[in-house]
Amino acid sequence: MFSELLTRLTQPRPLPLPDTDARLALAALLVRVAKSDNNFAFEEVRQIDRILAERYGLSPVAAAKLRAQAQKMEPQAPATADFARSVKAAVPYADRSAVVAALWSVIVSDGAEKPEEAVVLAEIAGVLGVSTEDLEKG
Image (cartoon, rainbow, N blue to C red; front, side):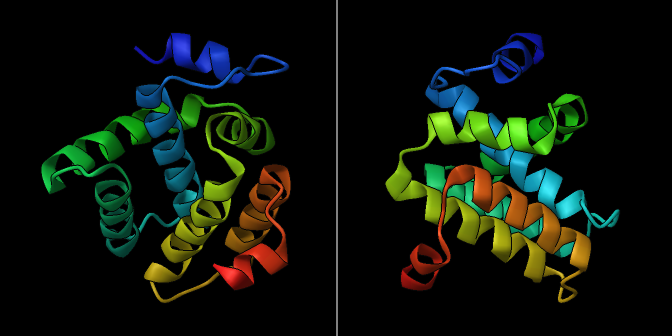
């Protein structure tokens, strides 16, 4: 199920993803950030579902299903920088600061910001080309 998407994600220069694949890739990136501290808390799961529902106009059940698919795919996904490059190709620049803000909201949702989460977020923000100034405006 995920093999075709994973193949596209690991290409040296990934092409923009179809909407369904872009949704799954973003969801998996949210899961990756949440798991980066080796503690995938209920609050993080709930926040990911909320982000997916709001961003894509999904029902709570559809958002939870998308997150569950992302949880299955995430361990097989490429390295974080390569993964973020694929999301960059799929998401217009104007929306990338919102992606980073969503990632940040997942990190803080469990009330315990950890250094390893901040490192992963900084790596992703750098690859996405989101500047600190853009984040402060958003």
